[in-house]
Image (cartoon, rainbow, N blue to C red; front, side, top):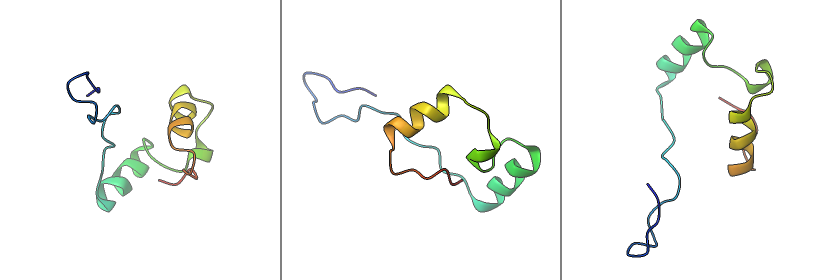
Length: 59
């Protein structure tokens, strides 16, 4: 969703996915979630850090 001339208050970013604790545990088990320190350099992580500077690399 992007802001338009007729609706300048519209969000300019997509919503962030929210998952349950059990879903997180399942994803960690599958290797698709976990601490950022376990991930290599990735443009997604760099973009996330740029958009959310207070993010400290937690799940």
